[in-house]
Image (cartoon, rainbow, N blue to C red):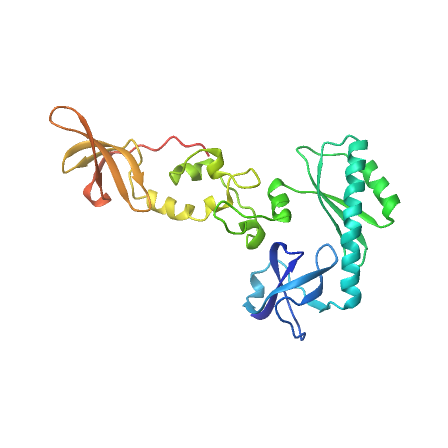
Length: 278
């Protein structure tokens, strides 16, 4: 176990763990760190967090130093140059008629690399674009294609819950979600209700999915034939979290009526699985 600090970059995306070493740090301090991309400037979001370093795929990198005046000046200059590079690259994309959308441009702190993030539906041949950009900026150029989910993570925003988007605050990976999850959770299949800002199924669909799956193992599915104290009936709907089953029954005059039961009040005669798409 080691004491770690959380570093966020440009106020967007998730916070990453770093080893403070012997540097005295506090929240909102700006620091220089070594990332997979290279040297970047970030902001301390939390300190004194005890973490198990063995659970990380790679060793936690150390903080290089607190940002000094030169670092802050360079970062400010880089941000101005990034805006210019964004306009220039957008113009070049139109010239080459490339079917791609530029999302963000980022300089590494030491100007050793200029990274262009973009989205595209298909694979793009941008070799000529890279040559042009390299001749203009005289540094290493990298064009990185990202998903629409990653695009939203970089741009930031709030979800329909009113809170900061999960992908911008704590989500590390985009685990798969499916329409099956929405069906099993009895959610409206209206696209506006179950899709996020990125236009994909909301990541939060997966948060309670394991609970639904565990409960559904001991509950009858819609369409199942069950025996109740009022006679045989067919399951009409299931409130999974409350474990309430609504059953369609027939009265003495053969008219339909509905009644709710707990699982212990039912005996399954013939179960039926819902027609779900994965």
